[in-house]
Image 1 (cartoon, rainbow, N blue to C red):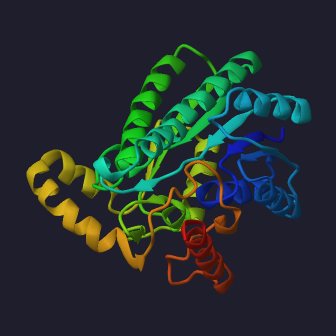
Image 2 (cartoon, helix red, strand yellow; image 1 turned 90 degrees about the vertical axis):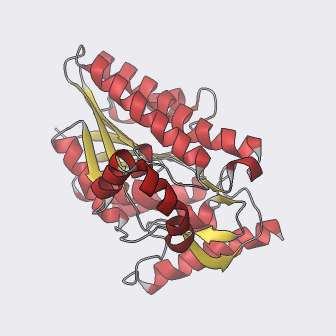
Length: 311
């Protein structure tokens, strides 16, 4: 039987890579994100790969939007077999210098939006006799880093939510809850993030391609497991954070400023926290040296678009 998968956050980064990966594996796809134009592009890419695909513009923080998305999926394909949630936003800045409304919207999107998706997915799975929910966490759900307080807060909350849902799912036959925790990934989210530091963020090395995370997600749909880490240094960072907290706290600030921030200056702006920036949506963000020229161009276009918005 062909699997029907909902992918939230499907227009960029890990979500877009996952949609294309699953399209190549023959899944029926329901694609959701905030930007209708880009969403249609991803739908067409998936159809070109041979998949049936439906695009449903969705803001996971809007009341009723996730229910409407699930209804559209059921109307088109009859049932939902799996749900992959990758939608997230990010903000850079000292906690006390980041506008409160920006911090709160990051948490609302990355944690409460995820909770809303999980609630709807589980309700549909129970009605249909089972299903697999894959949530996208982060290594920053196990460690902390300065200048990313909203994102870290949300990802730590997501770890607790996922663990709780996994415990409750033991009472629901056929339902699996999976959590994938990437480390640094070459996506546009760093340039698209709100920024109150004056320098554009970047993924600290070593950096993985989003396609690698997409393959991990596809593997979880075939063979569900509680948690899957994607990143060569994830376990080392978690060890240092837990076993050597004093040394970790001394080093993490300088390392973040050295490896987690680029030299590109940027004026203060709210990025895509409240509204999408279609010009910056792509599979990759242009941080890896082997990125094709077209993707590097897309990354440059994103940064340029954000600068124009704040001038």
